[in-house]
Length: 199
Ligand code: GAR
Image 1: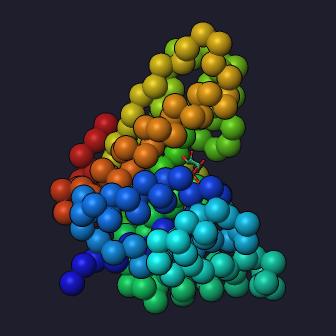
Image 2 (image 1 turned 90 degrees about the horizontal axis):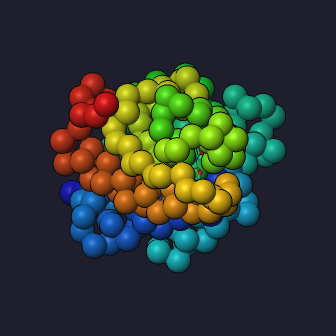
């Protein structure tokens, strides 16, 4: 039986789409069992439905507290018994309780060369700093923001005249390559939290 993956996404879901294509083509030997979002307007939910994947909305405003929302989220994710939980533009920080429940099985992609530029607006911050290099990082998740063992990075040159939008576009192109590859390596047992094989 194929391992199952659950993807959490808040936005456009272009990384999700790339993962869906790689699974469809057999590069990732796993079933994307569900896509869960905190955002009713997330294009990621539409992409999931179009691909015939369970799409689930769990929004915080439907719960009395952040803790109750996160508990509902982790219970839903658990139902799918995922081998891996994939954060693909999921714009919420998850608590230690959530991370512990899926210990060593949560992966994230972040648009910077971590440990540089944790947090938001990474592209503009790279331009403002005058850096010549930028990129994306796939890492295992801990309860610290944009932290945890690094699995893979891809570098992008910052070109004269780049604005944040153009830089984001080129970084995203790289994300679509490295994230499916990192997931493939995890599913095939080539890497793990304790053996991330990078950096
Ligand atoms: C991606 O650039 C991803 O790296 C970033 O959100 C974007 C989602 O795009 N994630 C973070 O900033 C997490 N800290 P997508 O919805 O098109 O995949």
